Length: 145
Image (cartoon, rainbow, N blue to C red; front, side, top):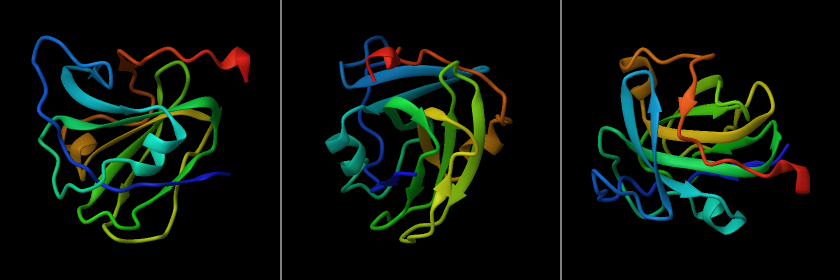
């Protein structure tokens, strides 16, 4: 298992109509999410650093080269977050709550290709749970790995 450090950056200012190349717009049920993309080793390790909040529907989408049972922690992350581990088909595997500034790990309960971090409690407040589908995920060419 690979542990991915999660360092909170918070929400960026997003255009309502066009997302930049390093951002994406996702949908889960009726909720629209503005997510910064972390799809390189460096960007995943940096995470959302140097911020102390997220706007209501903002988060970070971690994209991996291959599906695996990834682990995240909250070292140097000053606010609580929720994380959804997501399979290659877009279905949510599991959701976990993460306390700030902790080093205990939060594990994918299956092989995840994506992880989505949101403000603590966001998924439960929006009635989103395991098996729900995330739409708008960036395709990953896993055959090359």
